Length: 128
Image (cartoon, rainbow, N blue to C red; front, side):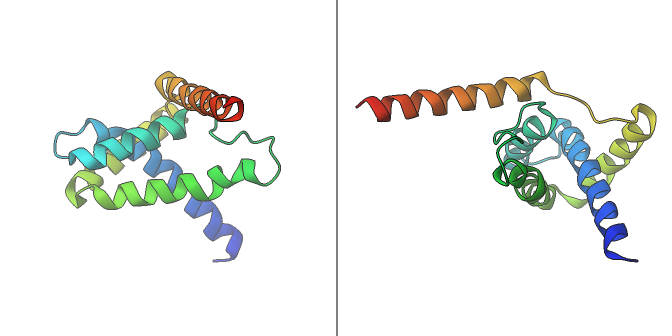
């Protein structure tokens, strides 16, 4: 398997695990700390708005290439193995039926609130 094929396989796994975390967040056997981190990761991953906009050179893609996969990996490690297997099966079914990932308006609102809070904090710091 060459580098390009491995990269494609890795990207598909990351996409599936993002949807897996969506299901794991609803599962009763998922620990609260995994749900909390998973909620943040899923809201961010499914939000149409990025924390670092893609039009910013280099930095705009850091969240897509490093931050998001790292957070997904960490959250997947916190989910118990039986729950993870069940949620991965649900995610595979979802992806096969829908052909797309779910979207989150809540995630978009969360990112907008974060940007707004950062702007207000920067303004207060700048004017003081």
